Amino acid sequence: MKYGAFTLEIRPAHTLTTYRMKVEIIYMSVQVQRFLITGGSRSITLERNLIKKRGNWKILEGNISQSANIEAAAHAMLQIQNEIDSYMAKHF
Image (cartoon, rainbow, N blue to C red; front, side, top):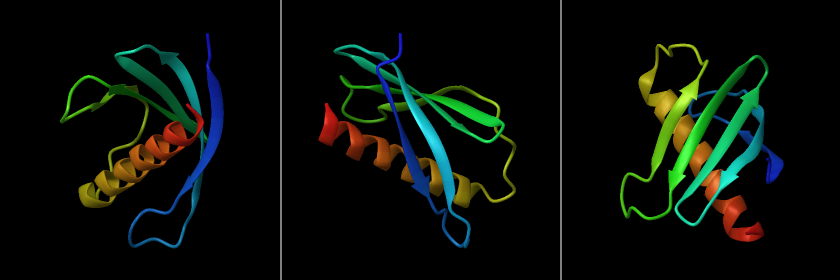
């Protein structure tokens, strides 16, 4: 059961390219939220634990390529998490 979907756009650090992704809320409970993020032929499933105070995001699975620039990949993941947090705060 899907709970909703929205589109987000991010622009990773030190790039001029903007990436558009579809975010689907695939599971929600009092303790956990799960999101499927797809863009092009790549996808990733993220889980947000609502109970823990730190380390509340986890990558469950994905078919993303290895990035040569780990710092840029980490920054992009942080942007995705922040955008999802912002959307969820406004709509749920």
